[in-house]
Image (cartoon, rainbow, N blue to C red; front, side):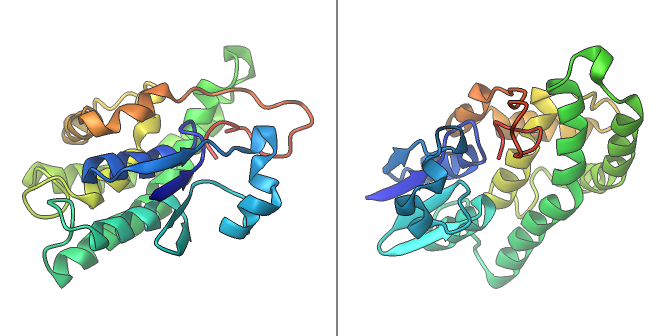
Length: 219
């Protein structure tokens, strides 16, 4: 049976969502850094980076949530899978795009709202992060003004990967008024029954001696 490592309060929720969309049964091992289990010798054999998620099935071990999802889409034929080489390229394109254009500034903007009391927030840093998001949000808005989904005429792994990263928009209650098509598309994706795990994500301010960064429950 397939095995998914990682608390569902981490990026492992992205792969759990994919597995549920595909109807693949899997064993869930809630590995996380807070209890030290990501540094155990056993887990380091699965992912020597000591991070989650990690995935194991049929003798194959993989890490990086979005790469795992692309693999699953290619291996298990479904409406989420690429129907051609061209679709495969587009699904890979959008997956790389959300990692390079969206994830980091969205993490910074969300951290400002989710992790700190109002008097500890940095409005300047928040505005910088929002300004960095405006351009890729505009790109996605334009695409979704002409297409219901990212690739083809159906929900695919491209939509799953991009919207899974963008769950932080909902968790931080970011104002998406300027991007109504993105807002509606994100609702459509995140309300799919298989996506329910993202709603359980909660953020915690790390311990003072933590060297793991501010997004303690999302790494």
